[in-house]
Image (cartoon, rainbow, N blue to C red; front, top):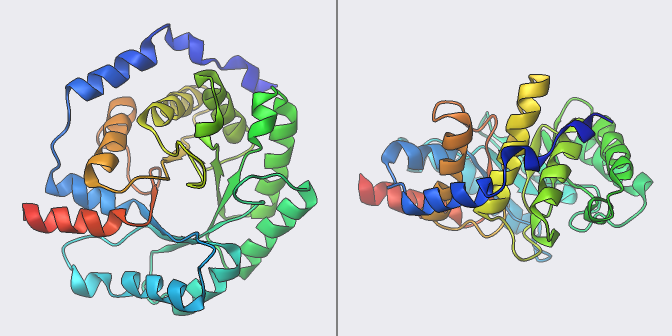
Length: 283
């Protein structure tokens, strides 16, 4: 299998720790342009067991009214919901250019029959989702059963048809950095358009360490295949400073001009309003 040609160890001992120390020693001050970019990369998310038609519709209204309320701030990239609310978003969304994102494939733990996962993905696509966020079976990665993980993700990729598939790694459950790297490679080999850190249902959720390892995997994969895959940190990202940590990684690994909402997303609930507040304060 091609994924055996990739290795985090190829970057050398201490590489990840050295990068993280460098980021901490050289913090980036927020600028208006960076904050606006952050807002444009947000997948505004609601994944609560209390979600209902009224609450999801209210979230969509925030997006619908954004340009009128904040004409100088770009709108979010997408709205992320459970599959049963895809139709609610589709019926209520009035502004163009906003992706309807649905989690699927037995979110958040991915521990059910493959047929159920594949069917749920297909139903979310049929209902109108533009992007599907599925969860890799972390147990397969930990057990080094990479073929099983690859086959299952490939089946869900087929069910996605022409819509984008993001693969959630649930990085917080892995004890070894190499597992995060290997899971990223498996996801990309299966056809992922993005690799995503977390479901937000386990702790720790997104961390700069995990995102850096994922970025290295994406960079290594691009050098071999020529296919650029996106990165989506998600879970626990609430402040502009939280988001800036991930922007720093993207700029360092890919270049300041080589990331936007086509290859970088931030899954968040409260981040958007905090970024808007910081933009208004700077302005």
